[in-house]
Length: 137
Image 1 (cartoon, rainbow, N blue to C red):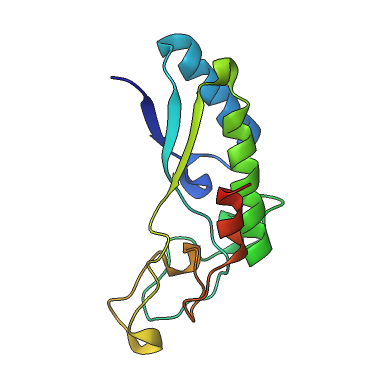
Image 2 (image 1 turned 45 degrees about the vertical axis):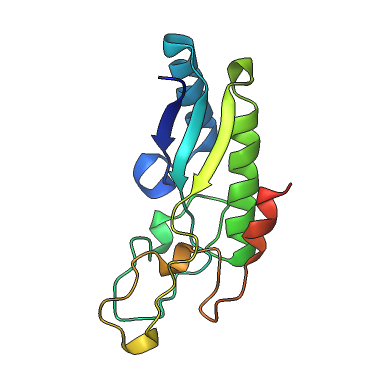
């Protein structure tokens, strides 16, 4: 293999970027390969736009210091990018965002909507969110 790929969702994998960095460095030390976070996401709101429960919909699922807001989502991605870029040997390649456009398409009456809709990079009116700026920083 050429690179290691990991998922990182704070709700399931730990709510600390410093712990993430420690884990990435441990993997680099053990396997000596570059690392890519192959999927991540963070909410820009705790609201919903359909009748489908969201994976992250409660305040206790959030990382401290990163509110479920457009700016909180952007800050999370900016800080994640910085964390990845400072791992040992410059082996942090970057990250891929999971389902950036999975907004519920049938609106509030949808029963088969999106459980990711509040973690997209577009709001419920399909307008781009500030988090997209983190990709070009």
